[in-house]
Image 1 (cartoon, each protein chain N blue to C red):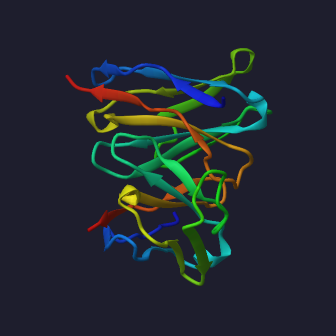
Image 2 (spheres, each protein chain N blue to C red):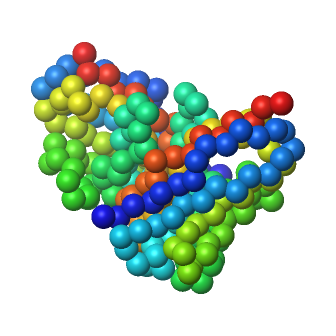
Amino acid sequence: EVQLVQSGGAVKKPGESLRISCQASGYTFTDYWINWVRQVPGKGLEWMGRIDPRNTFTAYNPSLEGHITVSIDESSGTAYLQLRSLKASDTAIYYCARQRNGFDGLDVWGRGTVVTVSS
Amino acid sequence: SYVLTQPPSVSVAPGKTARIPCGGDNIGSHHVHWYQQRPGQAPLLVLSYDDHRPSGIPGRFSGSNSGNTATLTISRVEVGDEADYYCQLWDPASGVFGGGTKLTVL
């Protein structure tokens, strides 16, 4: 079964950093890009960034560039999203999702990681 | 940056046809993907490349894309179709989502 299993939720303080993981199984990890999408409670979806595991090419939402980093560990089939200098506005559910190539839809999603940023 | 515009809500009676528009500048020159999100769940891809249904998606879901509007059409709407629906495209390296449309089945 194809799955993306995400790390558990976290509560952070403003200014802290956070790394969320997304472990892939059931398919060849390097055959699919991994995307990160977040959703503020009660709001819509926001695309954050993505990585091609074949060559670690990354692309980011211009509004988040410098605030996030997407990376992978090919040996474990895991993708990571790092967020720096957290703010209350980063409170959201964070999803990872895969796509076959750069123009495909996101066909498999993780269940989401709840992140709360509060002092 | 590219903007996709969706109406906040659409209502339809069971058994009828729901049409959810997604507006964007010359959106017909892009490929549009559609996602369904039920409360408390992750999004689910229901249409890719304007009108292609992934495995497991009922034939009641169809799509079109021309000019400045892409449309998700759900025929013979069921209560279980009640959800938020998002359009999405690549511009070209960045992902863009519409604001989402809440489909209410009356």
